[in-house]
Length: 392
Ligand code: GLA
View (cartoon, rainbow, N blue to C red):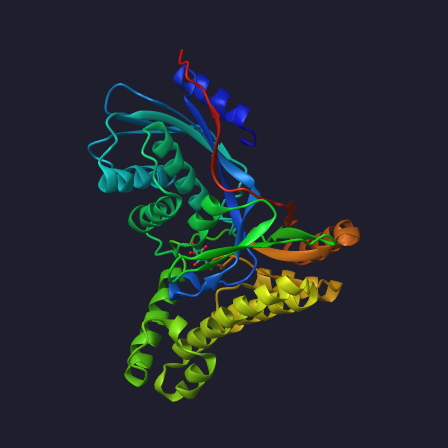
């Protein structure tokens, strides 16, 4: 596993027999609150974390693009003139970004060699794929002097995910990996893409992730179905409120007033989303007051909504959250797209060891596997961390 810039440098040097021109770090992300709201034009509250994907890249003189996954010890090659999807899933994220940049700027004059790898656990809801796309975007932008603005980078990474990975994701993950700022969470308005940093000064608490070990693949999950259900809801609600464009434009009370007009599952999805959008706004007020107990209570409410109304949780995640509540944590919830992955827990500093031990014991007794628990810290977003001019 790659977890330092030196390791990716060395992996590149041994595979391509030269030094890379650039090293880039692209972090995974957590999301404090605001789940499944991004593609409904709502608010999210993510942050970049100290788990990342590293890239080492150098230009070639011809049109060949050679990709090397250090974690899988696998390579893939394509021509700049035909960046089309591959049967190698891992390669598609990188090909997709290359294709989107080429479409947008047509400025890649020659090929490149890139090695990448990192310590963002896969399928854990920490957006390893967005980190790969964001890092690849910055690496190409820097290597070819394209100076792509940050938000444009996030949007093209999102298009790569749509067009090459088949997940109709929102903008949150790429946005967070690119715009992250140390010790801050970012409230993003996914409608107009304006954002604000909030210091996340949890001096008495530590953010701890518990990985259920249930691997999710959003491409195979009901993620795209949820998105369609929300669109179906908007189409029906539009008949009553013609000016609405998305669930952002409706209140929870308006959705409740329309219950009879909506299919039962669509009603539940709309109810959750409108409630969650309002919850993010209220949660930011909690942060400004330094009221972590109120913030934590909202995390539990989000979990309840994701589990019962949005129906994207699973038995193992519900169990982990229930155990966290029994332990007395002020806040815990499943995080990310769902159907597996991690729970996010707000744990008092002096209780971390006890919490991890307790949750591991009960989880193992029930599911016969130990959940990996990680303390996570909030870091800066994607950046170039080393640049060399000499190539061997
Ligand atoms: C995944 C998607 C995001 C977002 C979350 C749920 O991580 O990539 O765009 O929709 O699920 O909040």
